[in-house]
Image (cartoon, rainbow, N blue to C red):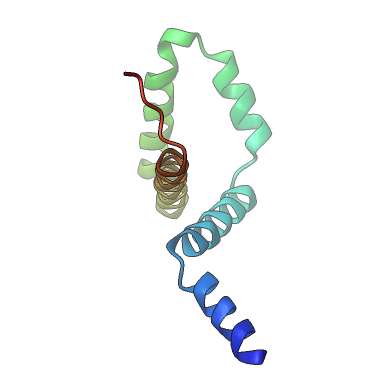
Length: 102
């Protein structure tokens, strides 16, 4: 029975979604450690809606010019992993339950 448990554990560890989840949780923990998320949300909510993309890009550029490269890289990594996970989850759900419009 131990072989079954080992095989099951290896199948979980070798799955790409497991590693994406691990990297996403590490990136989220690093962002929570380096950034105060509540103040970021308050700052973004204080900006008028039409100027939000300009504000976000200006904030990222300001972080880069002030030497906070690891923070920006962690933010980009978390965003990329999060989008990849959502894309994979969406593909998995649509492959199991295909929707036909015809």
